[in-house]
Length: 357
Image 1 (cartoon, one colour):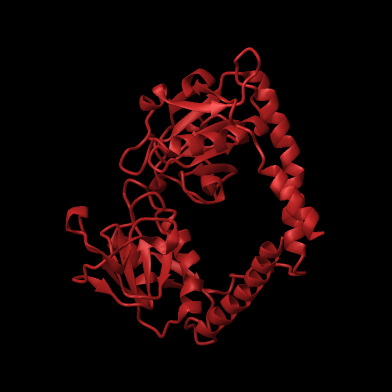
Image 2 (cartoon, rainbow, N blue to C red):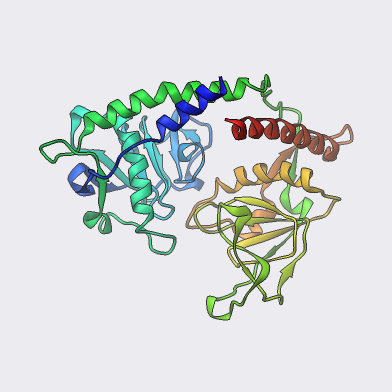
């Protein structure tokens, strides 16, 4: 089974792009800025329509709401995060949190379907990622000159038929691969019952301090972790020798600014945190497993904050999270530790399977 699975995965990745041609994005899509529906003006879980914030998880959807439909974006379109450059396909009518976000509607109605647009999402993410970065945001004006590489017909037009066929063929293979991988460990993931969990302010559990600015001109190469507003590599963006404002190991870093607000990492070594990061010092006895239980919970709360407003330190202190509790109402750290250890064991089993493919 594993050799067949490996062949399927490898076959999905094969695509000859040498003959692809460049096309202006504005020739393929109608492009407009999205509406701006601020988080403070919506009621989470109040309706059926996605509230999209250009975050990197859950197809950028943070909740579902009811709102004035005259402010909704059209279904069956692509959205680009104007500041995050996260590209998603939105199948339903949806609401956007930021007018910097771009809505792309295909001009070719015949092939304006899920499969073609998922293909285009991947290409847009890859090609635009080489042009724009945080601090150099995309806009409805700048995208007019941008081009992407696509498969083409003999008439030198985008080959949407090929794109659709490719994605339709890839879908069942990808689904089968995922199902085989999940069933290989004979593990069924039980959803957590949070109905009896307690509510705690983050500031009750942690002392929170802001990171320190360090310019590139003042930065010196070394071996100390430099943790910034990054979603990758545990937030570590480089290594420095500057040691004036270090934070100790066994603390959490939370991105309150940038492309992934709320992203939380556990730090195992001393580090310098940038001024886009808040550092959480536990007021309780914390270890790695307990910290890893907290990380996604804090991330979910942070993801609800407006991109422009950031996640201000005072707000972070007052925001609440739900945690498992003991009979006396205190956080059940023993349960958190046990849960993460069990989850880690399952994850290691699945990694072992992937490595053996």
